[in-house]
Amino acid sequence: MAAEATAPPDQSAQVTAGVNPWLIAASVMLATFMEVLDTSIAAVALPYIAGSLSATNDEATWVLTSYLVANAIVLPASNWCSLRFGRKRFLMACVAIFTLSSFACGAAPTLPLMLLARVAQGAGGGALQPLSQAILLESFPPRKRGAAMAVFAFGVVVAPVLGPTLGGWLTDTYSWRYAFYINIPIGLLALFMINRYIKDPPYIRKAKVPMLDRYGLAALIIWTGALQVILDKGQEDDWFGARWIRWASVALVVSFIYFVWHSWRDKDTLVDLKVLKDRNFAIGCVLIFLFGVGIYSTVTVLPLFYQELLGYTAFTAGVVVAPRGLGAICGMPVIGFLSNKVDPRLLLTFGFLTFGLTTLYFGNITLDISPTTLLVPILITGFGLSFVFVPISTAAYGTLDNKQIGNASGLFNLMRNVGGSIGISIASTLLTRRADVHQNEIINSVPRTGQIFQNSVKNLQHALSPYFGESNALPAARGRLYQELQRQASLWAFVDVFRWLSLLCFVCVAVVWLLRKVRPGRGPAGAH
Image 1 (spheres, rainbow, N blue to C red):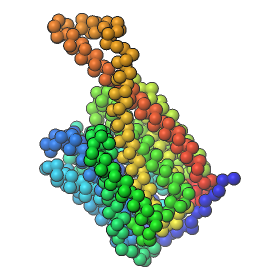
Image 2 (tube, rainbow, N blue to C red; image 1 turned 135 degrees about the vertical axis):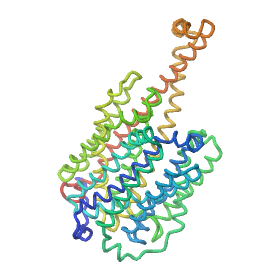
Image 3 (cartoon, one colour; image 1 turned 45 degrees about the vertical axis):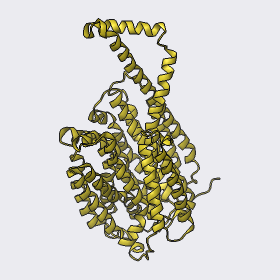
Image 4 (tube, rainbow, N blue to C red; image 1 turned 30 degrees about the vertical axis):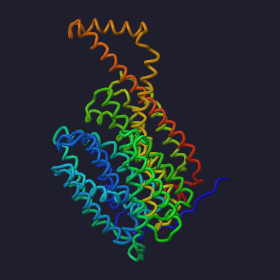
């Protein structure tokens, strides 16, 4: 019989004395929603940012990269900072920095100033997710943490889906600058609610904080920065064909190995990796990493298909995929109710199977689909996602003491973000490489000297003659057929990516059953 985990004692009453925990949930969810929304809302506005600031599209991508690097560095350091400065004070400082830098991003007149503001925004936003998650888990008794995590999941799962739609609408209707200005009222409301409803627990107020782990922080900055830059620019510079990527990879490997060795062996490190000795938390980190690969890849690839191959605008593509957010919203109350009654492994199995089957269905797409063809599968995908994020989080933290949650939350969220970055990079590379492969396969199966190709050229030449003239119709016909060849090759590349993502989801189902057996109703979301 599988081993069962043991839950730590309930300490939530020390955190929520005199305060409704749902007000605390709303306070931290606002901050999380604002931060996660900004990661996807800025991606839609990149071409407009590049044009407005007189930058190339390649230079504009640093608007995303600079944010992600600063975000990844602060994530694991959030626990030390919350102990050193007080969690409530640190959270309010992060929200204030994020809000002010959002205004600076929107008002930036040049690209260098925009990048500086994005670094500050990423630093302020990096701690919002782990701090919010830690506060939320500590504020609710174990039997209600599943419902609380459903509220938190609203910000983490729904915001990336709504981001492209909202960003496209703001950019088309007003200006790309409003994609950043929208954070200002949300940030002010979050500051008010955090100041009024959130209190520091006794163990934080009385904590004896060690000196800052400078060596661990330096190693963290090097490997997270190198990883993000390699992932962002790798496909553009032919990966290891570029000398600078090879050197960056060496720096990444060396600094990462040192970081792991230092964080595991030494005391008072920036990140305590010994929390991975907890089996459920370690497996939860693996699952959230794979989940990050899958969800961020799908959220990126599907709108790209509509824009690149079907010619949709950014806003229209965002509207088409928006039902995923609606499905997630519908799933949150269901998972909040079931989390205390059903084994989280069963919920996770349902979620990953649903996500995998719908992604496999996406692998049947053609160039003839309408905007509503994938409406139901996209809706179901969002519903399935709510059955993944909540049980992973609650089961992973279920056997940890409150004092471990802050450290664990930073590590857990870092794994999801790294998984997302790697997933997006792999998906982008596969789309390019597989399109080349399929283009060669199509050319080999339909040779230019073959009768089928020659007939197609003649028919198209005849059709284009009234528009281009007899002498120019032949080059136009060949050019049109080449464009169609590229579209078909790209279509099959998208099909490959969707099918491989579905396979990843099915692998996750097997990993789920490595979690320890849990009984519903005890511990967070049933873990105990």
